[in-house]
Image (cartoon, rainbow, N blue to C red; front, side, top):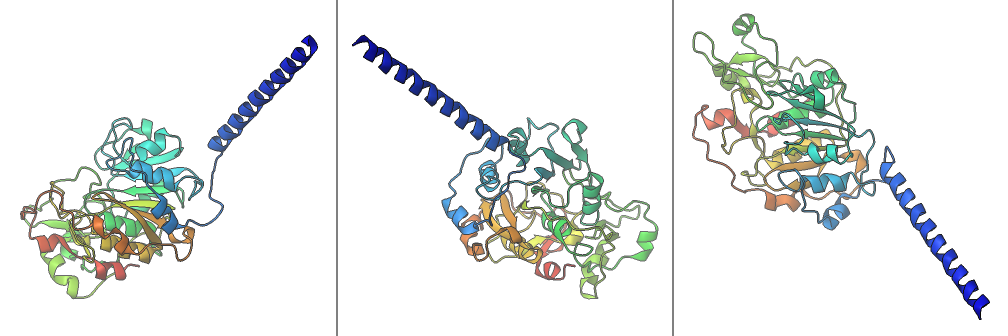
Length: 367
């Protein structure tokens, strides 16, 4: 009897040892999969199936559920990651710990390993945060200066004003930007010693600049300063292409662009290109661009709207990564539009129609 007991005990020890070995092996494989870099999806991204299956409403640091959306999009079962490079602007926080930006969780979780943070008001080289004044004319130059890769995994655009036009300039073909329908006032331009791009602050916006004669100047999409009266009358008098440096476009795999939820679906309103430096957000309701305007621009630039965090961000995925026929119609996100936010604009920066308008013509004329 005793030999049988000893034999059974020996079998149990062997089984226990085998189980422990298998557990350790499984844990090792799991850790290797987590650390694998880059981690990419083996097939195209089924935007429709992903949207209907996605239920993530959690957040660690973001204002809404952007943390959950981005974590899911970059999961290797969906889009995965390639170079783990991201760019985020504006970024008014001086450190990562105090930021509620979309990149906070991506950085601290290790999903992103290389990043550039940009803002017009603050800098901290220790966290790769650089003070830059961004315009549609200089944004590619700034990206090149900070060695942004041609196809970063993620770019976040959130500046409360000309978000739409910066998206167009970053992703555009040729020289980027859109047609500048404002003719340059040569007399004023000759007397202006500032370099292009010094007026638009991507994070903390500057005070409106006035000449000694009291004539307000505005910044056209090209970055040229023009007379305000000229800008409102010459838009129908012809068009001139912007003098944007011939730098290659950037093609992020995923982008988020802040949108203005006050506008209903089918409304294409945006801050006008020529009003980008004149307009400064003061808790009013005319900032940025509508969902429909961003959708139209995205379609033109080869991106698909895959998700909207209500009142905050539109999520765009590059079209070549999306399985054909799986993108959702923009009407899917109608419930995220027509939502009142902030205070009604009271005219403090000039007539409303001078600051915002239908963006379709400028989007369709983009180069």
